[in-house]
Image 1 (cartoon, rainbow, N blue to C red):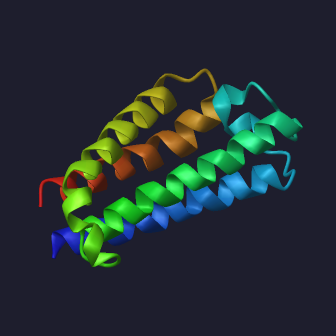
Image 2 (cartoon, rainbow, N blue to C red; image 1 turned 135 degrees about the horizontal axis):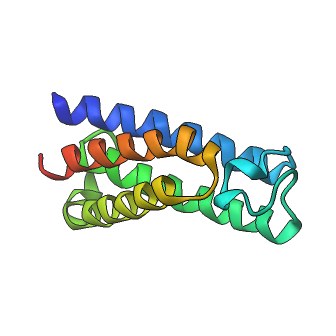
Length: 127
């Protein structure tokens, strides 16, 4: 049961991050809330492309978590037993970077989100 709850929380949070990344792709002036605030305002075209790439990676991470917890793609289960650890490692890196960034907004907004993603991914991994 905790695995399902963790998978739902992980998916909801990653969905928010995906929506944020899509907003950056669409030209929302939220650059100071991402990438250490290096690109305040609208992202330049190359960074919009990078955000689109991040959307794909984040969707893959969510798919791994949802598959490992039994929500989707039951045929992926044997793959996700090991792939879930990639999600955990990715979450450790994201959490670390969000806590050490110079951007106060990333620390305030994304550090807690990434910490919750880490906790929920570990919960799914050790199921």
